[in-house]
Image (cartoon, rainbow, N blue to C red; front, side):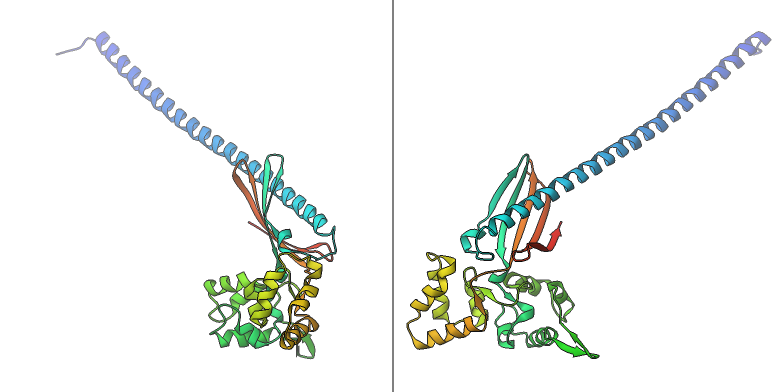
Length: 290
């Protein structure tokens, strides 16, 4: 079959148009893909900027909320004799600041024993977790003594996390030590807030510890020692109590209060803080956030 020149010309033109249309379609699809990628990238960039902006806003809001609560509690605690704290003063609180809510739990650091200022190795042995660890007891005792190194006085560790460097100090044991010890204060324990296990660690006779725990519920914090002295009827009890008070192992006040704060906004957690407040100097001794 033979095609005329005119028919051949029409066939070539139709084929050219199809090729051209295919090329245009290919270019259009390619351009559309590029535009889609650019649109997705732009959207991701906007979302990332919005997320960063919200992060910064939340961080600022939570920080100023935590700071406001810290200042408010510092004012409340210093309205009375500085450091005179009872268990009722340590009750949890919920503080509303506009659309931000701060849930605060308080803890008297001096209701625990300062692990770095123990008065004897026997005291360290009574700390839960160290009862059967003479190696750690000896290491802590030696490391926390003031000693002379190269002609200079050197004090042992002051940050509890340094215990992690001790041999065989796992996270489980560290958690137990963290619950019942502190690194703040001179080593004196607040008689008005200490728990039963703290009295045990100090070596307080069980009869005296029992009397303290029962008497302080209905006695003014400043008068607890007078009430306790009246309750100690035997000569041995009076001697033990006198030694504990005379050597400053038991006191009626505290210097350090810790505040665990969860800052939320519309039931969404913004930040968690742990702040340790020095009531005497009115300064923050530690600030942790996550």
